[in-house]
Image (cartoon, rainbow, N blue to C red; front, top):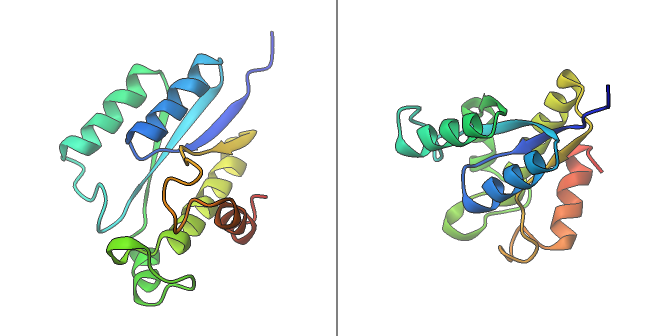
Length: 142
């Protein structure tokens, strides 16, 4: 028997995280896709977007874990430590919260690492090397 690495992937169902999911599974890495439900994203489990997440994860033979962030998310919306990004979303604070849940899930599942579909420089407010490092540090996942 050989060891099969296990990853926790922050999975939105968008192109970037879907590519990350495919890359990980194609390398024979077991993936637990972690998706988050907030008042602004995937709130309706019957939505086409959420059904696409379930379909993609199932097709690639991965486990899906859904985290509901309504209670934790609302205080961030009221007063984000790092301010707001475009469209008044608290990008950095929200990512820190998600990474904290990813760390907890990684520990619970005995996973080896956390992956995301982040693209360096794609979002100038939250996807710079400086902010990605800050998010990791604040979430305790350096």
